[in-house]
Image 1: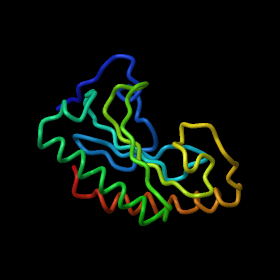
Image 2: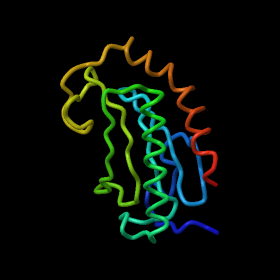
Image 3: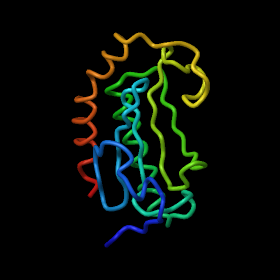
Image 4: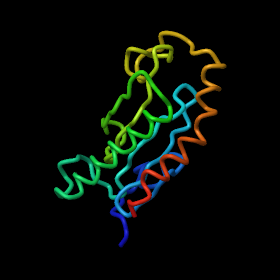
Length: 147
């Protein structure tokens, strides 16, 4: 079964990050964001714009995967807060951002897309990056049943 794609859609044309898990209906990727180690996306494989465009069972799968990814990011990265966002204004392909947030991150308490309020020390970011192998392992284990 092939995915429904759309020309010139960056999430149809590319993985959208480092693939942590790929299933028939979705993929989970790790975003290479220097300021936000552990930033993941849950991307629906088919070119769908809104959650309500999905069939009911697919909506349930998408939401369950989103909660599983949030759980892993919380357990491994130990953030103060998790931000979940599904915007799609720039890339109208159904995807969710799962972003670990900390009081010392560059934008806190504002959204990560706002103007930076501070510079997170390199040592802090390096310590968070060192946790990424554990995040990869935990995510693979958590999503193993999704094919």
